[in-house]
Figure 1 (tube, rainbow, N blue to C red):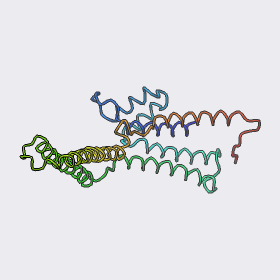
Figure 2: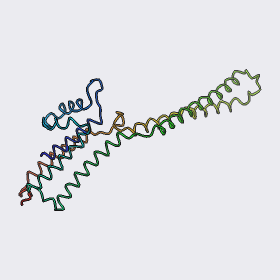
Figure 3: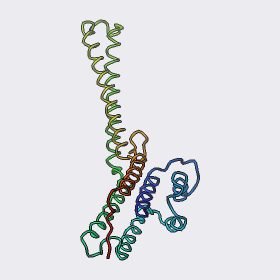
Length: 233
């Protein structure tokens, strides 16, 4: 039970640290995170555990130190196989995988795309928009001039070609910039999956499903026709 609670607590703390939520409250980030946790899951952490974890910024990762220590104590108490057994090594390996996965998620959130790349892409998009606007303006001016006869009728026969060129230039000058801007916006949203609402990873739904899976597994494990497996010295 304690191991499951620590795992769920770590997932909730990681989720709350990656999703800042309401920025109107002028509270320190750690206190705000723990305040939200107490509102969402009030009995998930003990007071003495909160006092220790509140001192550290990356408390969601440090919880797995307690998990590894608790597994070692369980091994010494005979609740699981001893440390020299392959089973104990596999359990510790799972703990290391969980810790490494949390660190990887946090690194993805902290390490952004280089500013040089982002600025270069933005400049490319905006310069393309400016050039398309100038090109479309020139074609539009030429077409209007011929259509109104201000050129003295010298290019009256070319008016259909100019209208067709104007329509083509309109499509090129409108569709392509919109595509470039859409791709730029999509790339920015994908690069920050915990910031934008439209592209945010549904981590809350994943945590709820995780808790439900753990509860169902506990019920199924406690209701069997045979005795539950238990290691004894």
